[in-house]
Amino acid sequence: MGVGPLIGFIILVILTVLIIVIFFPKRTRKRIKLWRIIGTILLIIVLSPILILAFESFFYFKSDVISDLKKINITLQDDFDIKENDVVGLTDYYRTTIVTISKRDKEHITKIILESDNLKNISFGDFYSKGVTWTDKPDSVYNYRFIDEISNELIRESFEKEKDYAAILTSITLRKNDNAITIKVVD
Image (tube, rainbow, N blue to C red; front, side, top):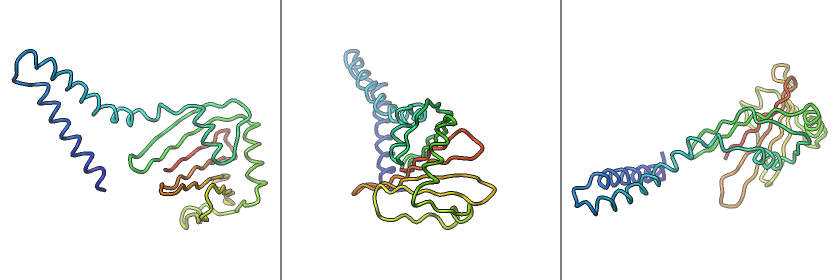
């Protein structure tokens, strides 16, 4: 646990104690109304980040899918539906979204990946045991085809690193037997 979450926790405890003291003052009637207003404002300040983090997976729209796909140079031609969206993590952000696409878009994405110059045929075990080595070129797009019979997946991913910021990995996974793509963002 780093210093940042520890400081955040200490601030949260201090604000919570202040809210309790403000809501239960032993003062006169006029001051009680003022302190309750201040306490309510502090309560809103404390609860807002918690509620935003708790419901973040509900605030992902089609425009967000389009912008994520732009990072890996993919555009969908037909309409699509967001089937599932999961967000995990506070300091490390992991978002996994499953999007149902048309057959035409699936063929279009398959063609882009298979006809790319940097397509690598890789086994499922090598991909996850050895990891992937990226070059230091920003905004690079990588394409993989699993050659195992088990997975039958095509993967296209982009590794984006801006100066003085953490790297962002955006990837899509396309399975042979499914009209859905899985978009993963690791920030």
